[in-house]
Image (cartoon, rainbow, N blue to C red; front, side, top):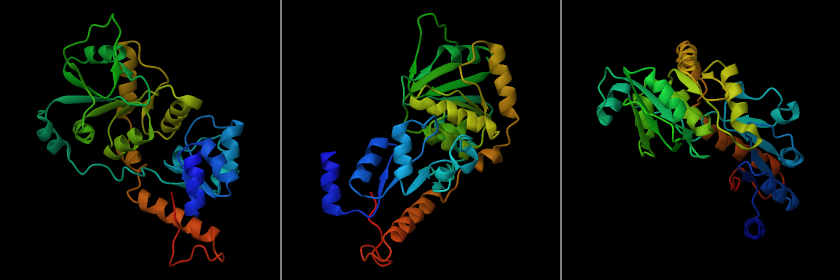
Length: 288
């Protein structure tokens, strides 16, 4: 806090962007520095979040308007800029065939990719053993953080790769995908357009549960709040996932999201300081 307040005093920023931190939003308010808050899903109706959102001059949502929560107050929506896929773009230009050549995977292999996030303890492998064992003709690849239990008996077609440096290649190579629903994960998979099962991970404020509900409501994935506990659960979810139109998934990612968000922030700062002599059209906003 001391570092930031010293910087506020030295830089006199026209606008300050807080990445989901209600505390930093309040600090900016106390310091009389206009701030934009990044929105996340989940129940953010607590006094801390609402005070930060109400004080913000704008809100930046890193997702499509179609994924907005039903309970988001209208006065907050009115000052929200939606930037679906910001930081991700339109997805990889790598084709399925080229990705498989790069990874050494035959064209005819039915490849299921499980994408485990890094925001918690990882993805449990026990439910994956059930899904993989029910499909002995398919190859199940898991990338990211996982945890296992003593009683598991993994089938031979389930491979745990751990952290990899080429996640985009694996997404492009996959025929079907299973994942949680952090923002980056959602947009990377949506841009690829694949039959997709979403199982939310525990996060503060129920963030991923709300995000999974929004994705299911938008009709872009099959989802349930807990991992499948038997082969029949996996079969039902895959049937639902195969009915998804991949174009509806790709529509959730705007290739111009980053440029659009930058322009919105720039215009917002300029309007805030218009006539003050601090920010002009020639001397655009200093944004952090």
